[in-house]
Amino acid sequence: VHGIVQDRSGKTVATLFGKWDESMHYVRGDCSGKSKESLPEAHLLWKRNKPAEYPTRYNLTRFAITLNELTPGLK
Image (cartoon, rainbow, N blue to C red; front, side, top):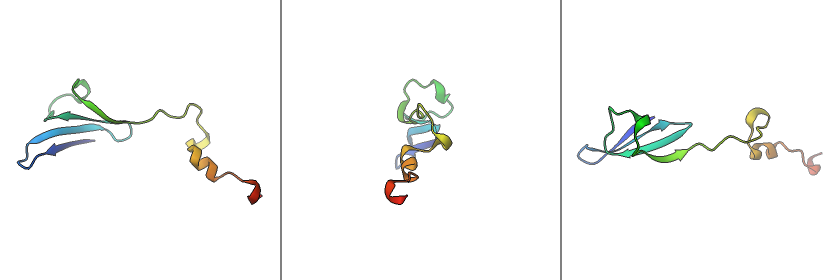
């Protein structure tokens, strides 16, 4: 993903970049033409959480697992 933020005059004031499922970063100003991986001034906006230490079958979340739980009242 790559995007820019412009002011009213059309000048680029910030650049956003990253992968939608890994992380997003921003840099003040225009960084087009520069390698995104080697920008020390890039600020982290969002980063994906680490996957569960003990993944469940089908990678269900804990919440999804509880929705499928058969409680004593349903037996």
